[in-house]
Picture 1 (tube, protein in one colour):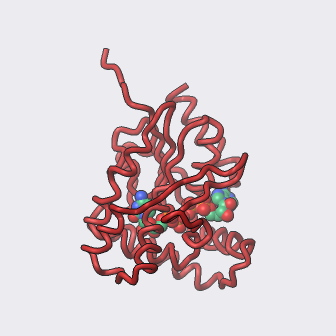
Picture 2: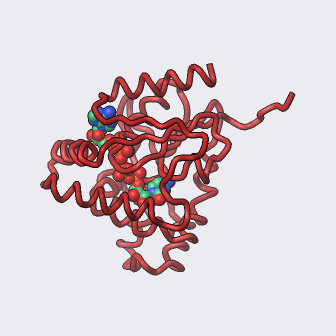
Length: 229
Ligand SMILES: Nc1ncnc2c1ncn2[C@@H]1O[C@H](COP(=O)(O)OP(=O)(O)O)[C@@H](O)[C@H]1O
Ligand SMILES: Nc1ccn([C@@H]2O[C@H](COP(=O)(O)OP(=O)(O)O)[C@@H](O)[C@H]2O)c(=O)n1
């Protein structure tokens, strides 16, 4: 019998606002597994570029930045999200703005930026297991993952979720603007040539429109139970 010597991986891919980050954190906590927020690496690359005055089209310098990112993910206290340090500075809030997310989706199509971040992401695969969220976790980064979820929701519901999330953080945002940004980001993420946003052939589709966080969590944990036990 073939023995699998690598730690199991659950991938959660999907568009912005589908609930990937929320569910990934809850599943990782429930299982006691490591978490990879791959989008944070693209956001950090965009932020590092802004700080260094590097243009978002300068593939050569962006890939050098991506390769040499000095990043630390510091797990928060019980139930708190991970804090992110870039060059020793706490950038947890800075990388979560809509501007940073949009800039991240502009550096993400560049093949050498993606190549520069690949091994860094694969290094997160550790025992007892990994829950990884992003756009290409199941298709490119962890093609052998034990469970692959492709999480979606209507663009209107995702914009509404994002609106509430940003309002809670005190950001002044308009729902119509968020909806058009989400649509633009969806188009950039699905339309790019390298590692586009799409479900892996063996992914389970999970449409979360109209579902609450607890309902989505229960569905993912059911998949885990059925597949890993
Ligand atoms: N199923 C859900 N129902 C309602 N709100 C949700 C659901 N899943 C996530 N949210 C909320 O939507 C916002 C965006 O979720 P997030 O996990 O950041 O999405 P993603 O990582 O896919 O961009 C968060 O404020 C989160 O609490
Ligand atoms: N694995 C990944 C993760 C993110 N990204 C890019 O990075 C951007 C920000 O990702 P994110 O997951 O933090 O964004 P949200 O879904 O939280 O809005 C996305 O719009 C993608 O363009 C990617 O290309 N591949």
